[in-house]
Image 1: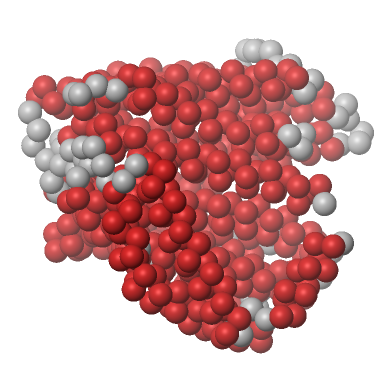
Image 2: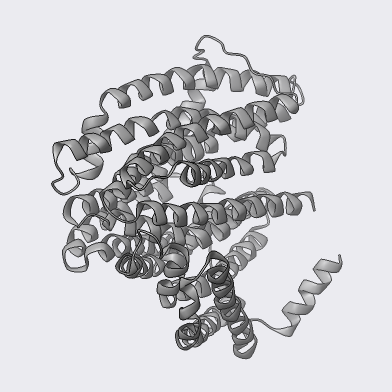
Length: 522
């Protein structure tokens, strides 16, 4: 029950952060639009985001948290004090690395921006200098958010999940305040203020986590760098995880680089806005499944109950399809009204909305694959096999690069998203067939029966939305309240149709409803 409450709290805060992120993106589209200014800011924001996902939230967190927990749980040791000592030792090595990296990136911001943007398709010297300045404003965010990740890992280990989950909300709130209070009629000024706001938000998140740690009895002190066996082991664990996360981040960098280099100004923004919408179900569903499945499967395998682990993974597949298929179909069918409602006003015109909807459709084709990766990889990690998922991630990165180069000319801004979707599908196929070949996964009768029925239910919902969205289109260009109500009506109608379709097709039965009621009562 405590785990359920914790997951519900994290899920609620994640949802709040994602909603605020959409509000932020809507305001950004209104005040900046889709052009050089927006592309320059998004390129500047790409670098700290890449390193945050690569080291701070990805590789570092996955390596640090288990070791910290082991120190705290050691009954023969001093418990929390040992964990704090280890955290201080990790910080003693991490902080100098971050400071040096920040200085180097600031010094070489010009070539780094050139590498990420390809020169923005021939902008003049003054414009490119502006993009470099934005990168220099956002680079310190990398160091700040990395320390935030360490403090957040400590609080997660103490079961204070909500504190760390709330930190990203500060990023979105800060950028919203900057957009509302410091926007200008000149998009370049607004973009510059957003870049400054990114680093300000990193400082606010660090302050939030620091005082939360103090409130929970965790007081850390700075010490001289310590290179002991624990720190060596931490660094050894980081690199394999970084390689896997790096493949995903490199995919994003490649897509951004090609769009900035070969496509018209605004294409980077179209792809970014589409990805933000695509990330909403991905974040909510993927984070929940990834959080629950790995410890559950690990515990079942550790207890020798392979059958239970197999059933858990089947149910994970089933749940992923139940939630992801309708989301994918809705984003493909209703991308235009969704993008219009959220972004289509101010400097973001009808053409920008249409291009964003096209990129969203391409991304959404791969949405089930993005989620299924979260379902299948625990089958490897729970068996202490980290090499295979990393190898397959690298292969998918090569596939993405080849498809990007092949599709960007004929499909323009739809090329990179479609390449990403196909590459993710290839990754899922390799993970799935490897688990099957090793005898670690086999689709049971229930999954085989429900998967095609869930697909039919999602298609039925898509047909209903296709014919019904025209009724709401006139309301998607009004005030914020009217747009919100119209979009809520569209989502609600799709949800009702999908729920009915799952009952009609037999994908979801009365027995399932009865089981849910019994669990709720329990």
